[in-house]
Image 1 (cartoon, one colour):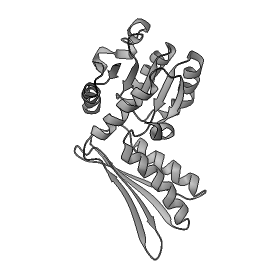
Image 2: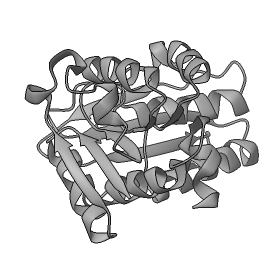
Image 3: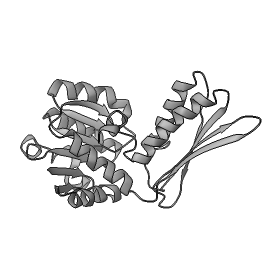
Image 4: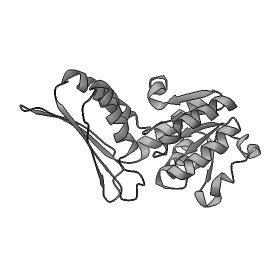
Length: 226
């Protein structure tokens, strides 16, 4: 397959590396080459099996508008843009495109989402909180993953307040901890990314899956099909 990777940052560069390791052709376009999605023309996009976006929230929205309007297939690992999700879903449906998005493409984090649901069901009377730590240059806070965890816990515990504490330190790829407390004890679930490779591998596998498909999915919906 041939993939177009948007973003020359640490994760985008690693996505390109992983895709090549898995036998795919790759072209990488940085934000400086793609101001206002100017590089994403229909003739250019027609040559790719899928587009993988790891840019910034502002750039990702412009990129999605340009790509989905041509009927392209797109995997978006950028977070911080979900206020536009309904619009992107509608555009995807109108144009017969494909969109696969996630706050986190790590298989381990997807397991954490499942464990969060199980824990909330097991100890409904406990007080839950979330702490997330990321590198100092991360644009959005709380992280998309922390917001996903909050959504999952809130759905399982209607009316409960689930606070999130965000920390931005050094070059940390990502640490997410769920704490469940009672007056008697405390339980914690933690996922710590040792590198960005887990995110990159998940995104490439998602791009492989979405090729030749149309529709819109959260990675949570299809991770078991990879």
